[in-house]
Amino acid sequence: MADYDRPHIDIAPFLTTSSYTAHQSPGGRTFTRNRDQHGPRLSAGLVASLTAAEARRPAPDTLPHGVQPGEGAFVTVILDPNARELDLEKPKKGVRQSAAGEANGRRTMVLHMADEDAQAYLRERVERYLTGELNDRERPPLYSEMEPIDGFSPTELLDLWREDPGTLPTDANGPTWWGLWCWDDFVDDVTGVARALKMHVAPEDRWSTFPDVRVVPVHATRAQVQTMLDLNQSGLAEIGYATDDPAILIDLTGQEQDGLVEDLAGRIQWPGADVPAICLLDTGVNRAHPLIEPALTSDDAQAVDPDWGSDDHHRPGHGTPMAGLALHGDLTGPLAHAARRRRSGELWRDHESGGGSGRGSESRSTADNLLGRHER
Image (cartoon, rainbow, N blue to C red):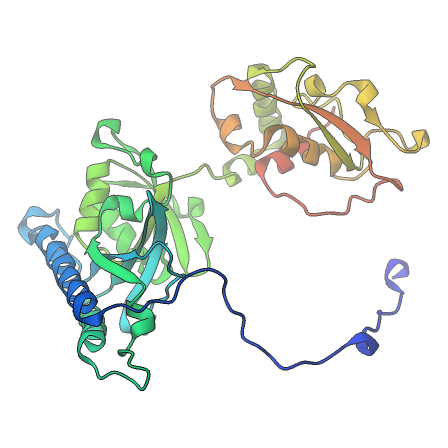
């Protein structure tokens, strides 16, 4: 209790009150579409997109046992490049949105409609905008939703891809690890279809969990993932690469982690002295660490007060993992990969003024975990 016996700071005398004013988002433009031209284009585009989704749906007799085409549909919304972010999501109506992207001046997002009722709901919204009575300002119903939309188009695999468009795997790449971003309440449906399509689904302890979404790694071909899209698995929110899970490394024993560290240190091609340097003020550094020693000379490990010493005096270590992050970034991939690594910078470290309390944000990457615990 001795460290926490100070009274709280009372800021009440410094408070001021004011009326709430809604925040106005910067950017974007005010739309004044010609409804007689814009409305029919939206209606025709939506109908064509839903028709295309239905046409791509495989016939039941062509599918593996236990796989049924979904009742839902994907539709890609094409937004005006200058439009503000648009929210069309209505989960209670079975309509969700995700996979917002921009490439070559084309802004898109994907709508997921869980069933025919959800499709009818979206069609009715467009129809209200097209045919509803104008208000006192001569604006049509739902104009704030519809006018930022340039059109609708059938959803392609690239529209769901959350990575660089140029990195979307092709059939020529063969099987690869994909990350299926699934709505949490649809994850069983998505993984069930994935297994039926002969995808290899990673064990559940390797899934990543976010609010409302789970990322399921699967080993599959592009054709298998395309089939999942054609089945209108509307629980599929987005698609990306399955990234390495640092928990695989963190769960190893200390001896196993040390072996990986030594292996990586032997593969790194360290630079010379004529490279950019990094100055960090922290709690000292374990310079003997094999992933740090080649980049940090003893003369450059310094302390404001020489009596402190320059070793990392924080337990289980703070300055050492921060040095590792500065040098290597996330070590999950490098530790798991046998390729040679290049480092383009060296490290110069100082103690923070006042002895270094170790305060500051903590990184929980694999680099933080391994560099923080490795001692010689």
